[in-house]
Image 1: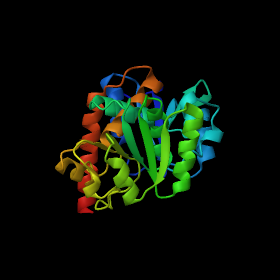
Image 2 (image 1 turned 180 degrees about the vertical axis):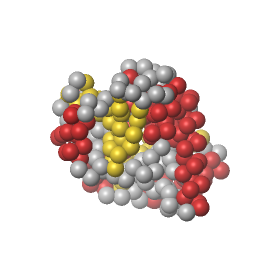
Image 3 (image 1 turned 120 degrees about the horizontal axis):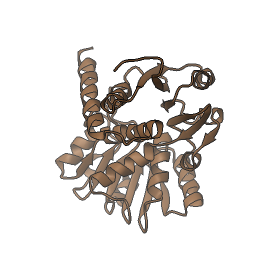
Image 4 (image 1 turned 135 degrees about the vertical axis):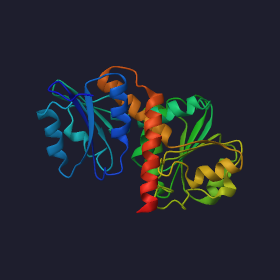
Length: 292
C-alpha cells in the first residue's frame, strides 16, 4: 500500500509491546480491503501524553493493552455501555476529537465459543482468574447464560467475590465466586461444560505451568485458553489428550482485533486472512524465542 497524506493511523499502546502481532493482523486486513490505514505499535511510558497525542495528531483509533486497560479510562471522553460495566477498555475510537472507549475482549470469547458450537446459554461455565481479561469475559458471558451459571475461581478469593457480586448487581446473572483450590475445583468441574482460563499461567516462557491439574479435566468439557503464546498451551494439550474440545488463544486475539477493525473502519473484518497472518506471526515469534 502507498502511505500518503490521507493515510489514517491506528496504534497499539502498552508496555511492553515488542512481541505483539497486532500490526501484522491489522495491516493485512487494511491492505486486503484496500483501505488507506496503517497500524503501528508504541511502547508507552507517559499514558497521559499518549492520549493527548491521539487527539492532537488525529489518530483514528488505538488498541490498549497491559498495563493500561483500566488506567486509561479517566483520560477518555466517553465509554460505551459495556466498557463502563466492565471497567476496562481495550479499544479507543477517535470521533472528531472525542475519544470513546470500548472493550472487545469479552465479545471475542463469546464469538469464539459460538464458532466452535459451544453457545454459553444454559451451560455451567468455570472461569479461571478475576483480572482485566476475566472481567470482560465474565460480563459478556453473564448476559448470555440464560438458566446457566458461571463460577469465577481466583487465588485471591476476595477479588473473585467482588467481581461476582458486581456482575450479579448489574446483570442479575447466576454468578458465584470460589477460591482457586483443587478440591473445590474438582467438585464443580464435574458438571461444567465450559472451562475458560483467563489467567497468564502457561504463557511463554513458563510453558510448563498450567492452572488446573490434568486429572480434573474430563472429555465432556470445552476448554478455552486465552493464552496465545504458545499456540497450544499445556492446558490445551492435556485437555485434547483426554478427548475434550479445545479452543486456542488465537481465537480471542483475532476476533477482538476484528471487532476493533469494524469500529475503526465501519467495515466487516476479513477474519480468515487475519487468522492466517496472526498464526504465521506467532510461529515466527516462537522460532525466535527457541533460538534466542
